[in-house]
Image 1: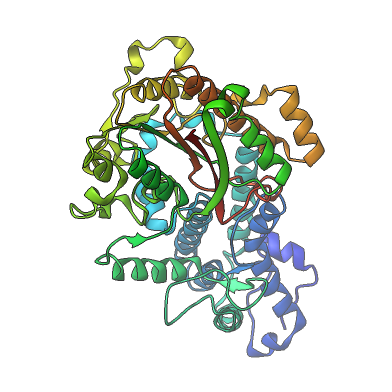
Image 2: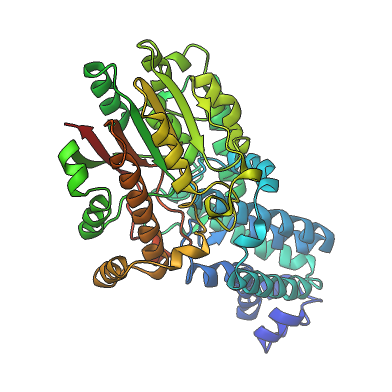
Length: 477
């Protein structure tokens, strides 16, 4: 008979699990050992879930398959465990950053060389990854003495997970993969399987055109231009500006764009519109009232976007972004939409107008807004801006906030990270207000978010709506 009198010692150092017979499968010790193994391989993610907010099944079936592999061969187990962990982490990250499928997230890795990755490293993350790797290494070492008899018990547990997964609906055998469907808690699921189903659905839709969506901002600009064909427009897409859940924070943010001088010349409006996907999805939403990958914009669709439509009345459109336009191929598809990319000279720019971000070294937003405001001093101009300084992780300067912002955050009980973002958004609004109000002409100004901020912690993430982003309009009186 199998004797595991100390299950945790067996769990950590391998224990004496050899010499088993079929009778052992009916013992409590046998199943206790298997349960400890399955709990152990999931444990780092459960612990991380206590500190961070991410979508993941409670039991990842791919990790259970890796345990099954160890019962066959240690090398097979190591390979399966490595694949399962990589896909698990990548899927968590892709969903957190609003990528609609893992392929888009992985494809974005080709732009990593443009970033200062040291600015993204946090000691908490390094410590957490180190502890997780150490724990999983000990766990894997404990599996080196698994015997074939353990295979059948692990297979039974895996089949049970699969049954729960099927009942939950997350396998979606007839459609794309989802992480949650019938049950309030996603008990079991396979990120690899869901990735496969999502990719199959993505490939099936590859030949379909971009999907039309409603954008209040896009419609407002078209409507105003139709009545004022000689006027100019400034459209600002703000990175990570989600809709604050608190009405007080929403009001405060809108107030940062207003002043007596602004009120005398513009009518102020604010609202919200739905979003999905990452920043480039937000760009297509406000520029073209379309949703989908930017690479799918066709020659027939491009003239229907704002730059093409306004060009029919002689409007010249320019695009402004403080970071390298090769990021997400903006230097290519902006031109296809009719935007003339503004070329900032980063290397010769003064130190006061560059490197405002620790990770994205580029031209500061206040300088970008200044150049865009200069563009709209002329009639029949569209200045399109994508911000940079509000990108997460926030620059270190974001910790320096006004007493007004700090007091508002304290009253509304915002987390430190959420408060820093709100304060940074407020500074952007102040800079934009100062730029447009200081010039003689009065352009139509539209400010809109791209997506909810991809915070890692639930406390900060829950401060913003997960489905809508705010917009603010200044319509000339």
